[in-house]
Image (tube, rainbow, N blue to C red):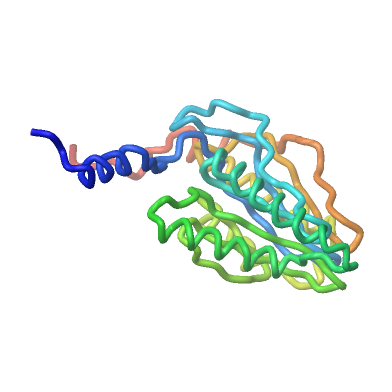
Length: 242
């Protein structure tokens, strides 16, 4: 029996509608904090294809306009899509040529709307984003999840870093951190994540943003020690009844 035109249109619409059901190539934690002159952010350069550590040269921190720095964990293709949105936003803002430019607070607000909008369409962007920046001497640091949940804080982390890095930051962070002490604190967090997160790689970058602009370090590795007894015999004390 011939289908009615309405039924054919409905089926065609359903066939054309596509959704990201599961992330394919992902990046792990991003950790960021305020220090006395601006914002510091750290992320490794790993890209995991499922559980396979496939790529080791992925940059996950980008400058946005004149005053903002963005870091992302999660699906890397969705991060590229977000960067395209932001390129359009900054281009539109520059078009006015009025001597003003979007600050980190405005960019963060825009990202919360984008993520929440896509979530409401049941087609989320599979990322957790960290947005930091400095404008007119005011430091700003916030994050937004893949469903639009967002907040500001003195230090933030995504992924495994929420569980392993944030406790370290709560214990050791203070408002007058120097650049050198801030880098050491971030390296301590990244070292713990390297030990405990199977998706982490020992190749990272640290970025800073101040009133003078954004600087992203060259990739480098941390010194590690794998001789701990817990690493040598990880099941010690955890034997079950089997």
